[in-house]
View (cartoon, each protein chain N blue to C red):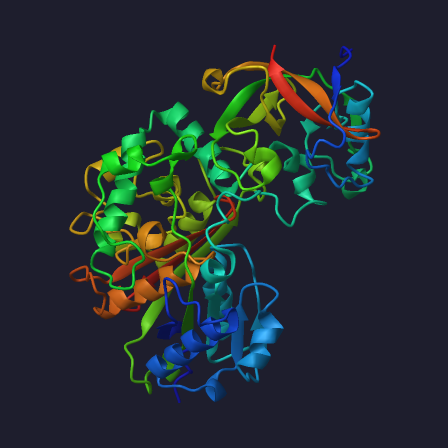
Length: 384
Length: 143
């Protein structure tokens, strides 16, 4: 009898209601996304024996979903948590600790807290830890990314126009997504003319704040043979952290994407040239530039030109965030789960803005302030 | 030796007061006495923020030592929107990463200069802002 093929695959994805959904609580977002992902996979909650979600909601959500698990994990690294989860779930599935993993996310951020996240105190909740050294200065979340953008502009001559082009391209993609929060086209001048929040970041350099939830179901390749959906293969994963609080960033023009990307590509036996489309965390326009460089899609300092040459726009060499991204579509606090769901849609050939012949996709999540980077390489075929 | 650092009073102004602990208190307490100190290892390297010496091997534990209090702006931003009332009343203001002569970086405010004149490479010196009895936080102004 052949050995059970325990290579991990994604067999189900689901999303709750994105954008503004005041009738849904955080737990409802988790549960609605979970139900849809399991239905997509042809499975039920009773089939799940491994559960992942980010942060302290873990045991509460396991109870709420009625799960009887053998394996539980809850890495929280901010927006990249779910790329970390895929790495950990893949290892647990290969090792035999679990056969079918459910990863969920849910947030009612917009309905509960409004649009206060970006321009509230960056040290909220951290008065006794690293916040000691930063709280007196009135930094904001936008400000932390602005520190990075300012340095990138200084070192490499990256222009505000190049950064703005990222926002313009994401809005162009959002026009094809009826669930996106903002769909009307914008221009580079619109971005540069929007009010300055923290130099050099304008309002339209910043992501939206939304509600939303997402879920992913993973299992073994063997089990997937009996399931209705087309499995998507986990080709490689990588994670890396260079710092947490902003002042500790060792190099304001580089991130953990260098290490995480290298590990993921090495595991997959692929190079950036093999990638057909990319889901790149876009909390801010600068985030995309930093990740494109770190992952090796262009050289350090050349991301501005790479974007201005049309590469990340649909039809370009590397379409990025075909759902409209966090900049125009959906960002409920942690966007990493949506990098996975849209990647899977693309590899199944079922995306709204479908990239032709899409066989390799990359999901690159960023948590904190370009602090914790999680990379997942996904394939239509099992390259390994 | 470092020269004495100016300390200005801002007690009860609403400026956030750091919740210090046993490891960080010497940093803020020294500044309150007019001394800018950072942790230095026996091999001469420096670090910020302070960590418990006990987490390092016995022969390489950092101790607080006087630092120059001079540095340059490594990067910065001008905050133009902020929800906290204390800061909202003071918009726009600069948040910077200052790299000291010792090679460590601290977040800080740059004052005594128009926000539009702050630039990367600007040379700055530290001063203390007293937020509570015995505790001052570092601010920076052009040197």
